[in-house]
Image (cartoon, rainbow, N blue to C red; front, side):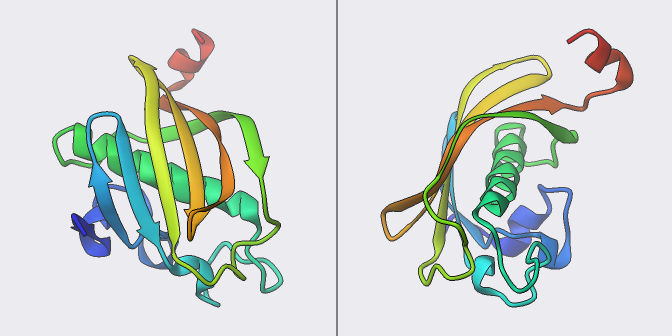
Length: 149
């Protein structure tokens, strides 16, 4: 594992149990692959009525995007990013909490210009795709930036 949970926690805006990722398996300028086991934790903060909906996988992918931004930005916590839109979202299961295997989160930076980045992402377990899609992220968006969009 290239990066442990403790090291990657410094690159995301969450702490404690809200840091959902357990490590970075690989990364380069456009891609990152992370691993997570927290979907099986009964104390996962995203659980509702004891269940973890597959859509929570978007948060796993978002955290991988933040880690990727930090690693490609020199190893420091990136500016805050805001999920602006999701496209081509495909859910292949209803829940993540009943997935026995570790989650593998793959994120690829498709394009980025200034404060806007588009990522493709997938969440898999044992080579089975659970969730995939594309996310548009606005980095460090202030009110003036949003008005210019």
